[in-house]
Image (cartoon, rainbow, N blue to C red; front, side):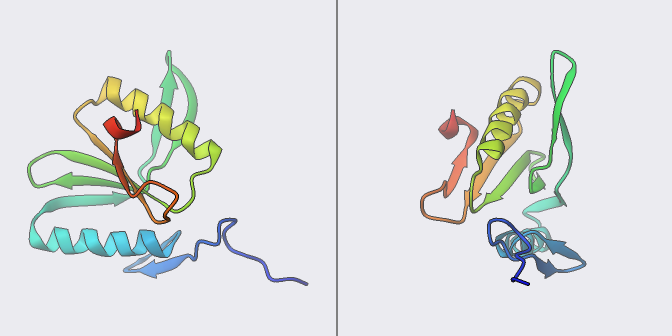
Length: 128
C-alpha cells in the first residue's frame, strides 16, 4: 500500500475557521478576507459560489471560483487562488471571463497565482 495524496497537485487541505479549504493558499486568503471584513474594507465574502456557464441558453458547465467578495464601495470581485492551472481550468476560466464581460461587465475578475511560473495577480484585461 502506497501513500495516497489528497490532491493531484499536492495541495494540502487546510482548516480555517469553520471550514476546510482546498489549499493552504486558499485558507490564507480567507484569513485575509476576514481581516478586511473586520476593518470595513469589504462587506462580505463567499467561498466557492456556483455559476452556471451558458452559451445560447444551453448549460455548458458549472464553475466554482474560489471567492466572491463584496467591497464597501458596492463593487464585486471574483477571485481565483491558483497554484497550478490545468488546461481544463484555463478553458473554464476563459469562458467565465467572456460570459462575465457580457453579462456583468462591472464585476472585477482576479487570479492570484501562488507559484512563480503562473500568474501573480492578473485581472480580466491583462488576461485577454
